Image 1: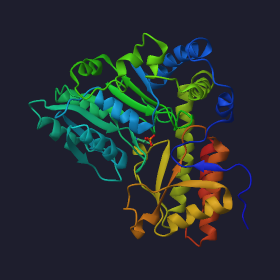
Image 2 (image 1 turned 120 degrees about the horizontal axis):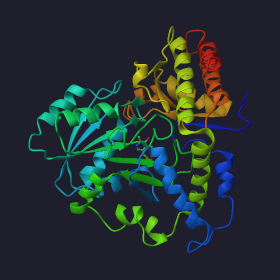
Image 3 (image 1 turned 180 degrees about the vertical axis):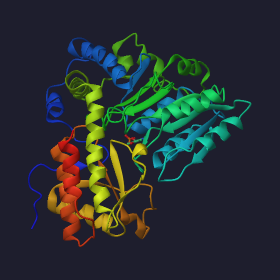
Amino acid sequence: MSLDRGRHYLAIPGPSVVPDRVLSAMHRPAPNIYSGEILELVQGLIPDLKAVARTRHNAAIYISNGHGAWEAALSNTLSRGDRVLVLATGLFGLGWAEIARRLGAEVEIIEFDKHSDIDPVRVEQALAGDSAHRIRAVMVVHVDTSTSVRNDIRMVRRLMDAAGHPALLMVDCIASLACDRFEMDAWGVDVMVAASQKGLMTPPGVGFVFFNDKADAARENADCVTSYWDWRPRANPQDFYQYFGGTAPTHHLFALREALTMLLHEEGLNAVWDRHALLARAIWAAFDCWSQGGAAELNIPDPDKRSHAVTAVYIGAPEGTALRDWLSARAGVTLGIGLGMAPAGDPAWHGYFRIGHMGHVNAHMIMGVLGTIEAGMDALGIAYGPGGLSAAARVIARA
Ligand SMILES: *Cc1c(COP(=O)(O)O)cnc(C)c1O
C-alpha cells in the first residue's frame, strides 16, 4: 500500500523546499523594470545579501546557478596561465577546479579522503612549496555536498597567513550559506560564491559572488574577465539593468526578498544556524543507533566535520537505491542520490544516499524523514540497531 498522498518532501540537497510564502511572492504580474517597486526592492536586497554573507564588501548577482557563480568568481580574478590551488574534499571541489582549468588556469588539486576534511599538513606543504607565490587563488568548498563534510575555513586562512602567502582565498558556500555558520570578513575570505536554491530557500536560477577589495584589485589585470561576467558593473551599477547585465530576474527577486525577510528579519541568522545544527544532530543521533547492528553509517565519522545542511550516508548496495525508491513511491519523501562516492554504472553506486536538510526545514519534517527511513528499512528487511527515532526525538525535546 502506498502512503505517498499529502505534501511531498523533496529531501535532496538542493533545490531545497521553497516556503509557500516565497512561492506566493512570485505569483504576480511582471513588474516594470525601468522604474518603480523593483528598483527599490533590489536596493534593499543588497545589504541583506551582504548580511547573510557576513561581509561589508561587494555583492554581485548573476542570473545563473552555482556553476555560473563559480565561473564568475574565477573569470574576474584570473588570467590564462595563472596557477590555482584547489583543496578538494568531494565532487564539488573537483567541479570548480574543472571550471578553472577550462578558463586556462594551471590547476593544482590536492584531493583529500572522502570521509574527512582538509588535512592542514598537505596544505602547508603546498603553500611552502610555492615560494615564488605563483598560486593566485586557493579554492575551497565550505560544505562539499557530495561527502557532506564541512571544512574549517579559518584554518585555511591561518595556514595562508602563516606561510605569508598572498593568494586570494575563495570559498564555495553554495550548500552552506544560511545553514552552517559562515563569516566572510571575520574569517578572511576574499571571494565567496553562493546560489539561491539551497539555504536561501528560493528557486534555482540566481547566483551570487561576494568579493572584497583585494579580490577587486585582482580583477584589474584579470584577462579572463568578459563583459557579461564582469562583477564591477553588477556591484556598482550606474543604471539598474547593470545589476543583472540585462533584464532583471524579476520573479526570483520577489522570491528572494521574501526568503531574506524570513531568514534575517523574522528568524534571525543566528537562530537559523542553530536550527540547522539542532536538526542535524537529531539526524546523527538516529544513525548512531541504527548503525549499531546494521549497515547504515554516516559518511563523515567526526561530528565536528559534518555539515548541518546535508548528510551523506552509506547503507550498502543495492539497499541505498532500494530505500530511496521505497521512500518516494510509498512515503512521499525523496532522498538525494549518492554523489561522487562510487562511479555511476558501478553496482556500488546503489549503496549511498543523502538527506538534504537545508533551508525551510523544521522538527516534524526531520522526524518524518527519519521515521520513513526506519519504515523503509523495516519494509526492505535492512538490519538496523534500535532506538534511532527516540534518540532523534530526545535531541529535539532538549532543544
Ligand atoms: C549545488 C552545489 C553546487 C552547484 O550548484 P548548481 O546550482 O547546481 O550549479 C556547487 N557547489 C556546491 C557546494 C553545491 O552544493
